[in-house]
Structure formats: C-alpha cells, structure tokens
Image (cartoon, rainbow over all chains, first blue to last red; front, top):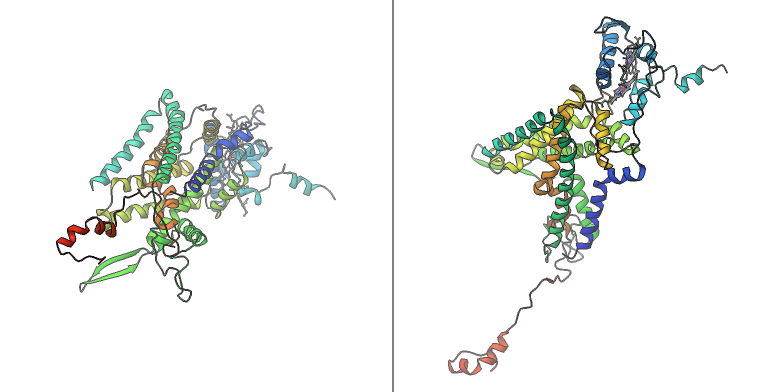
Length: 138
Length: 331
C-alpha cells in the first residue's frame, strides 16, 4: 500500500500510548508508598483499631458508610466492637482521635491510589492547616 | 446454540483455573507475573504483526463506500462527508466514524408485520449501546493507569473524579461501572433474542462479550463487595511495569481471577475481531478519498502484460483472413 509510511507512524503512536506506564515509570522512577503512620500504636487504650488491621485496611470506607447511615438515619451513636469496646461513631472525634495526622495516615494511602474522599468538605480535621489558620486570633 | 454454550464453558474454565490455581503460593507468581508478561508480549507482537500484514496488502483502487453524491460538475451539489473527495473530507469522515460510530447510526431493522408487510425502521439501540460500551471501556482503561504508575498523573485523577461525579455510596460508585454492565449486557442479549442475529453469531462473537462481562463483574465485585488489598495490587502493578516484579502476599483469589481474565483478553485480542481497534483506521472502504473520476489510479502492482493488438493481429494473419473472405479493417 502506498500509505505504508502513515500506517507505520500510526502504529508507533499506538505502541507509545500502550506502553505509557512503562516509559512513565522509567522516566520518573517508582516511588514506594510510605507506610501510614500509626501514632497511637503504643498508647494504652488506643493501641487497637475499631476492627482488625486487615479488615480496616480493606473495608474502612464501608465501615464509615455504615457509621454515617446509622448516625444520620437512626440517631444511634454508639458502636460496639467485636471484642466489646464502645466507640462514638464519629469521623472527627473517633477516627482522628487515634489517627490525628490525616496527612501522614489516611492520605499516604489515598495519594498512592488517587483516592480523594469528599468528606472533608464538611467534616472538620482539627489538624488541617486551613482549620488551624482560621483559629488563629486576628 | 453450540457456539454459545462453548463460549460459556470456556469462560467458566477460565474463571476456575485461577480460582483453584492461585490458592497455591508457588502458582501465584505464575498468575501474577509470568502470565501477565506473556500476555502483554503476545498483545504487542500480535498487534504489530496484524497491522504490518494489513499494510502489506495491496489496495490498488479506491473502493470507498459512498453514501452520497460524489464531486463532479461544479453545479451539482456534492456530499463532502458521504463521498469525500480529498484528504480533509476523509479525515472528517474517519473522525466521525471513530469517535461517534457514524455507520452504526444508520443501522436499520427489518420486520415482518401482519399483512404480511415487510417494514424497515431505523434502530438506534445498537449504536447507543456500542457507543456507551466503548466510552466506558476507555474511561475504565484510563482509570486503571493508577495501578501502574506512581506518582499518578493529574489527568488520570481527573477522569476518575468525573467518573465518580455523583458521589453515590461509599466507595463512590463509578458511573462507567454501571454503564458497561448495562451496555455489554444489551450487546449480549441482542445476539440471543433476535433469531436473525443469533443465526449469524459465532463463538467468536459470544466469547469476547462474555469475557468482557466477566472482567467487569469481577472488577465491580472487588471494588464494592469483596474487597482486596489494593495497596498490594498497586505494588504488583508498578513492579510489573517497571520490570522489577515482586509478589506481595495476601491479595485475594478474586483479584487473580480478574487479572487472568484480562490477560486472556489481551492475549486473545490480536487474533480476534477485537482487532477492529486497529482495523477501523485501515478500512479502505472508509479511509480513501472517492476521487476515482478526478484522478487516474494506476495499479502499481500491475504485471507487465504482453500486448497483441487487433491491428497487429490483422497484419500477422492478413493473407489467411483475406483468403477466407473475412472482412478486414485495413482495406
């Protein structure tokens, strides 16, 4: 075919697009994820999550959804863990109580996987620089 | 019907292999590393081979399908898109075809009504479902880049956040997940429900649809119902595509099923009708300008034929013909 040149160019573009992750990784290097910081691992009373670590890693968003629905729809605010501990079902007051630094905990994983929860549009993170700045006396 | 059952059985086997196999730690590196690399290589090599093969085949003449008046005399209105006469027209026609599936838009349906009357009607379902399916697939494809690169480029996050636009549920529902199930489901049942289409359907038609349906289903199950540790999944993905593969422990079997089905799809791709991904650009009925009467197209592959014109013939057999009283041109 007389269009062979054009076909080859098209094929080349296709191959470059298809192998995008390969050369992107080769140019940028692959940074590994920093493990989320467990601030309260050694603080007595705060050394265990509301469920097993394995469960939390994979299912914390489902748990949060369940908490949200129970609080907002049924006005039930107490969550009892499998081993009998009781927690106030609250994003800010409970999760962030043991995981105070959102940047070094939640966001290490979330940035690694392009997760961007919209919760913080409304819910307060007391350590958020923007919140701290707003608190400052003017 | 045999072709349908054949496809179903093949897909079930393809699901069972990694379900059983990935429970053994030794085989996990087969499913997690060896098979993905083999599938990617097959895909790229097969694709290049097919396209080069097409590039080699001779297309000496303009065989465009025309759906409108071609360019002729200046006072006859010509159809620039339906019978493009220059490169720009072809580019526009191809763009409409590739981005909007224009020829599917013309899909018609024949029905025998009471009477008996034969009626033709326009049928846009195939076009709508095809378009919805392909665009969902593209968005899902782009979203998956996040599992292979770190840092994640902004446009990947952007596509993902648009896909999660309505913020329904947690994890937020991706619109394309719903759309791809609905559209592939339609494309599959379309083949089953209409006798005429079922008659012309082969295993090569059912199998890719079922395969894509299973891939979408396993992906959706993993995201919304039976979670897997996707931090580990990403470590596997980035490892593979930076040629430093290592296998994190504790990724569930559902992930290996998903991965194995994807590997099957991409390895099968170059040898199947899915090659229309490349083929759509190379269809001579679409990508040639309809200028048969404006330009003379000579077959460059023409074998030099030895000619013997009638004049020469008459000259050669002049005497014999004359003797037999055959009328001669040169008299």
